[in-house]
Length: 165
Image 1 (cartoon, rainbow, N blue to C red):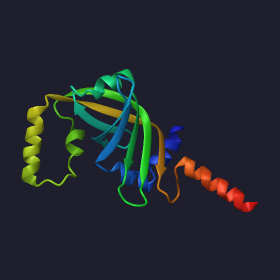
Image 2: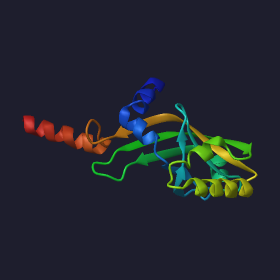
Image 3: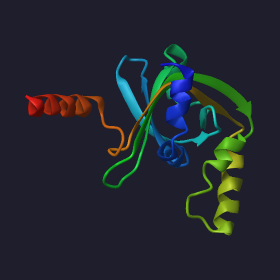
Image 4: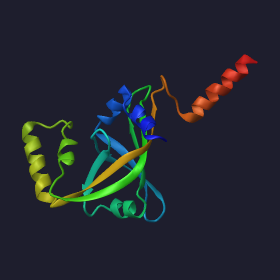
């Protein structure tokens, strides 16, 4: 997929709405060769998806061995809106708490006092974190208005062809 095609998909209004959500599902291959999918907080900075995790997270060894990942960001309403992204995970070990981690947790319902306590706890727990940075190399938006899953698109085409005969 060409970069301009990826950009066009990611710049669509529904994609932008989905990229503003809190949670993505990160799919990767574990060290034992089996697939894993985990929910994880993220931020979109306009060109990459950034997730943060502890330096001792088991997924890091897997991502170092095979950095190819897939992300799903979707809604819980009908019809669903689904953004699928594939890319390569780059791991960036940082001292302290990355700003992305603090900003990706701002939409959770917390009072100002709870937010202060949460941030204090985070800062006391982590001496550093790992930023998992994914640059999209492929993207698809499924909105069930203008785009459908590819298998459904194929069925629609086949039905239209049968109806023309």
